Image (cartoon, rainbow, N blue to C red; front, top):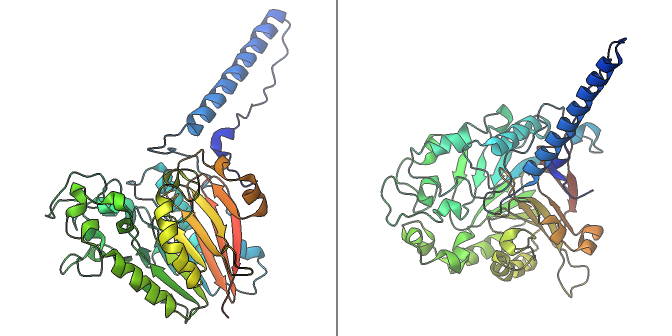
Length: 411
């Protein structure tokens, strides 16, 4: 069942009690009545817990979803048809930086446990790395609270490649000028012209890698090219605010140059798989796209990027922004047998929003062209030869909640 029913189905487990034999029938009745009351209270508490967990806010999302972190996890490679470990593995997580709150901590621990199975070469973050407005300086304690202290497992001590989300751009803050102690995307950057001069945030944790604009990383000798893009400057709604005018803010970005750079990086790529990473989705059934796939923020993204993706035969676009896990298979309209672009939302790194699943048309769900899971989690990606597999994990299940395969269009 693709629909996440969430932890609201928690059960009260009644304990069997053997009542001692009494000659006094009144004692029997009093004891039995007492156990009936225990059962009633248990049922009411379970119902209250289910309602409490199921309740959600479109602004803040579901808090504190129960984790099954103490249960053994089903590593997919123990029963895999692959003869050996994949050629390359990596994790994708987004919208996570909430000062080690319960959901973020549970996802981080789950990632650490599964790193012993997948052995990821690196981790990708799809943005909104530090809520609510990004960092306030190179010494901002939020960096350690949200990143270093949370993802401390040995298997996660690998390079992290990050794009910026709108919250990393100080979205909604009251700052106007770039001085020490003011929110700015500048503090997260480890490369580029507006990165903090001299020392960067990587001096506090060398795993961290983040740039603005479009940039590319190549892995496993031509197996995978990953192009990172900065999607916040693509949206007109982020301009004209006090926080957008600081150096390094959206007001200083060259959108035309970024799109041209991205196209050039895609055109010159000869990798077997081409993957693009950004924050805002092109297609989504979440709240930011008004539960309608191409409305809201998706209207801008799909019109700008989908034609570029199709022209350059991009295999997968990973995004965040909507706080859930999604997969949407977008075929090229009117072109028979043309390779489709897989659109994946991995924005469930901490708090999630629920209630969007039923917005997906039933025929798309039935055909496997659209899927959603509304619980904190992330994606684990593995590549073996010409096959790429995306396993989706959450904190409530001890096995994968979904697994999707993509065959390489290029050999």
